[in-house]
Image 1 (cartoon, rainbow, N blue to C red):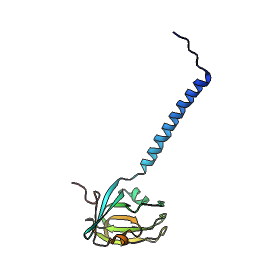
Image 2: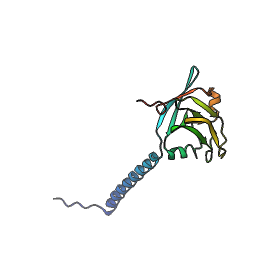
Image 3: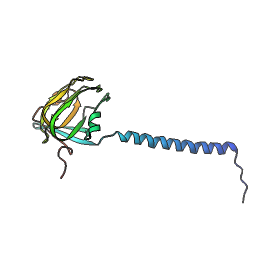
Length: 167
């Protein structure tokens, strides 16, 4: 058996590199878990407006905690993105813009996906209550001004897996 001596510097370098790899792996895993813990499911949603359809990628908020958080503290959102709030049953819905720096269009829809009201270009950070003014089971939030730009109006329909799940 050969007697191999390693220099103390080489041993410390090897141990240090091993510790660094372990630490980086730990923080990478912890960071990805923290990030994914707040992520919501994302799905495609279509707004059927007359003969036209408009496609969006939306985050789906279906629990009380997810709906309470909503888009609060979001400073930007792409024009083709949004958030769909899903409730267990139809009812009068009330939203506000507290802690929300974006102007939004808030679109209230019945259980069949039909749009019953649009609150356009809401005021960021406002605590003014925005009611559905009728029964709604779904609420879609888009970048402020999107409804006017795409000519989305009451009576149009929202279509997505959350609204029409496969049986």
